[in-house]
Amino acid sequence: MTDRKDELAANLAKVERRIADACAAAGRAREEVTLIVVTKTYPASDVRILAELGVRHVAENRDQDAAPKAEACSDLPLTWHFVGQLQTNKVRSVVGYADFVQSVDRSKLVTALSKEAVRAGRELGCLLQVALDAGESARGERGGVAPDGIAELADLVAGAPGLRLDGLMTVAPLTGEYAGRELAAFERVMVLSTDLRRTHRAATMVSAGMSTDLEQAVTAGATHVRVGSAVLGVRPRLG
Figure 1 (cartoon, rainbow, N blue to C red):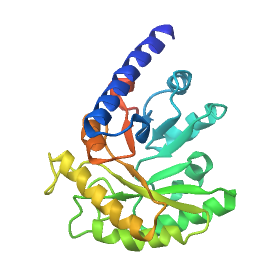
Figure 2 (tube, rainbow, N blue to C red):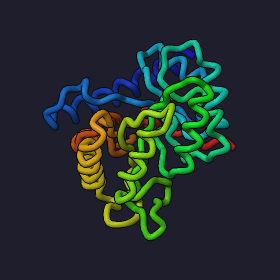
Figure 3 (cartoon, rainbow, N blue to C red):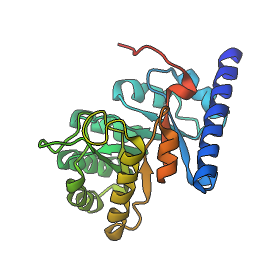
Figure 4 (tube, one colour):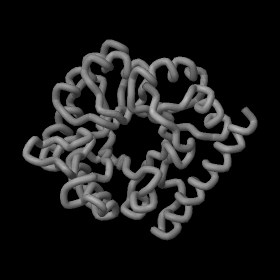
């Protein structure tokens, strides 16, 4: 366990330095960017080590992995983010432990989240997942709402009991005009965030950037970066 703690501490320090350097280069304070460690496929023991090392935000993308892990770590001072595509039949479980759902992308999901948040007596933070690769289907390859669908969905979340509209999330697209242009993609989302805040002033979060492109996200103005492999290492998927 000591070896694993040393490994995670070293990786975490490297990521912290990358974020700090990117903030300095962009003229931003380090405090403006929150690190979310994506712990998918890794055990609760790693989450505990991360908490010991000062991590306060963790993310998961599969409820079947996240639910038991969150329960096992329920005594820790952690904020849990759900970042994966979410099916409505998993909503009750996710609302039980997640503080934020970053992948809100359709009205049916908003309705389900609202119902379960009210039932659980909770207020759930919601980020709209923006798909910059959305074509005629109006959804991206990895989920998300097209830019022209943000306003309507934002109004729906803002008016839904038990939900709080906190901002936008995106993943750098693999196809379309922004493929391979991570900085341009994140800059586009920042413009969309500015538009959103004209009508929803409190929706200030912008979650963008992962292990390979966190610098571009910080440069563009992201408030949160989601980093997995750079902290935890590369591990084959379970199941």
